[in-house]
Image 1: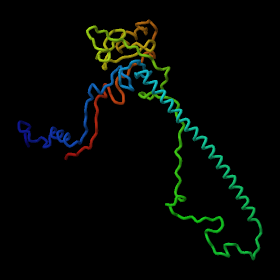
Image 2: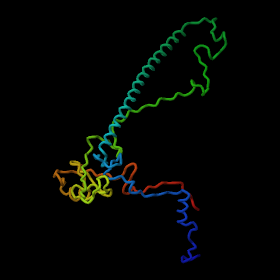
Image 3: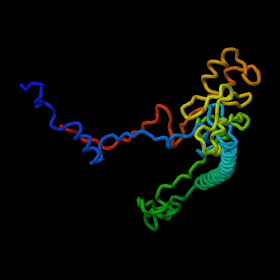
Image 4: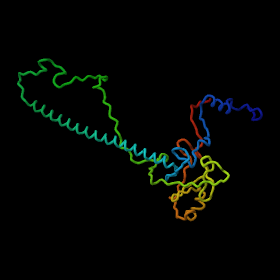
Amino acid sequence: MTRHGLNATNSAVYSYHEKKKDQKAAGFGAEKIRMSKDAIKGFDCCSLTLQPTSRPVITPQGYIFDKEAILSFILEKKKEYEKKMKEYEKQKESEVEEMKDMAAAEKEQMKRKFEQTEKSIVTKRIGDKTQGETSGVSNLTGDKKRHMPSFWLPSCGPQAKKTKVEKPDKTVYCPMSRKPIKVKDLVTVNWTIARDPDDKKSLIAREERYQCAVTGDVLNNATHCAVLKQTGHVVTVDCVNKIIKKDWRHPLTGQSLTEKDIIYIKRGSTGFSSANEELMSERHRPSIAIA
C-alpha cells in the first residue's frame, strides 16, 4: 500500500489533462463555449432586424420591434392567410363537385342494376343453351373482367390520395412570444437620450445612448428596464420598485398607474442571441468510454 505523499503512485494513469487534450484533438465529448458580447442583442434593437430601432414599438409581452418591420411582418402574414384561404375554398368547391359526380354515378349504377334484375326475371326454355355452354367457359365472357394480380400495372396499383389543405388560422402570432399580436396592442416607445456633452459621436455609435426618464441612470444590456404604457417612457426596474410602486403615480405626468400599465422589456432572447443565464452554449459530440 503506497503512501499519499510525495510519491503519488496511486493516481490514474490517464490524467484529466490528457483526457481533455485528447478530446480536443479527436473531437469527442461535450463542447462548451461562452457567448461573447457580439452574440447578445442590444436592449434597444429590433427583435426582427437585430438593428437599432428608428421608430420603436413594444408588444404586451415586452419584445421591442421597429414599427416598419413588425407592420411588414403582420401584412405578410395576412397575405399568406388570404392565399391559403383561396386554396382552401377551391378545395371545398372541388369536393362539392366530386360529391355531385359520385351521387350521379351511384344513381346510374342503381338504375343499371335494376334493369339487369328485371331482365333476369324472363323465363328461359329448358332446351336453350347459354353462350358460355356453347362456346366454353371463359372469364372474359359477358361483363366479367379478367383480374390480374400484377402490381406493376397502373390499373392494379394503389391510387395516391390528394393532399388535403387544412383551414388556415386567421390569427397573426408574434414571432418571438408566439402570442396573438395586433397593431392596436403595440405601444410606442419613447427613449430618453443620454446627455453627455463630452461625447461627440453619433447616437448609433455611442455605447451609452439612452437613460432612465426619471432617475437619469444610463441604460445598457445589463439593466432591467420597463416601459410605462400610457406615455411610452422607459425607466429602470429599480425606479418602478422604489418610486412608482409607492403611490402608483406616473413621476412625469402624475397619471395613475396599475400593474398592467408596466411592460417589462425582454433582453436578448432572439433566435440568434441569448442573455443572462443562457450565455453558455453547449454542443454534444460522440463520447468515448475509458476503462
